[in-house]
Image (tube, rainbow, N blue to C red; front, side, top):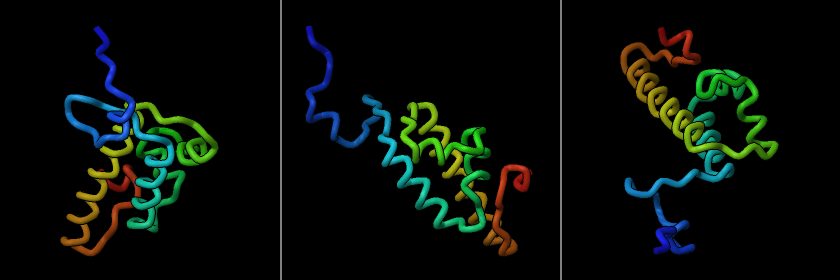
Length: 103
């Protein structure tokens, strides 16, 4: 019995019962939007904090395909950073720049 989803299902939104690795372009769109929200964060700082690699964004722009784990780490970092930055801004107007600054 064939259990693979039909090809048209691959374009559907992600559902909890079916995971899909986002495309490199999708990941870069989310990263670019994040960096636009946080203009003081450099691409190198982002790569180090989100994935432990200073050249993460450069390698994605040069064609590296993200794994599901990498995409999840990036998304988790951006979500947590957005929450911390919003809290810091509400408390004292400061913006968090790097993980070292968040401690």
